[in-house]
Image 1 (cartoon, rainbow, N blue to C red):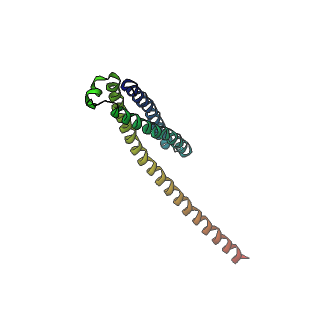
Image 2: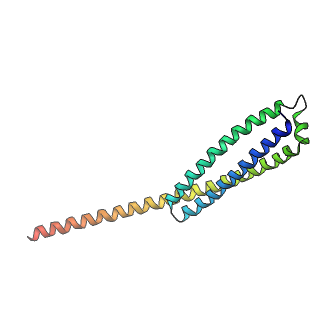
Length: 154
């Protein structure tokens, strides 16, 4: 297969992946808002959307690997590095791959922050539930005492 065509295919795949990674970044940022506002249903909805995009990215990665292997085999004995440096689309590809890596690193940082906030929200909810249960137990105990008192008066 033609090196120019293969390199253009790789570039197209990388650009599509970059677009999808940007979507994940946007959804991850929205998740941070949902966690802060304690809208956990929306948070999980966004997680499902992100998973669909991740599945698309995984398919793109497989396609990319196949095209990349074909490109390496198509160099007709030329040193791959020489071919890589001569093809404009391959140099552009390198730039897009770097952008994807940076965007993914940003997403990773956001995910870690979201995880910490999520843990705090869950902990707060558990404390609130425990407090509520303790209050309920106290109420039940008071009702029993009142009932016992009424029985003793009758």
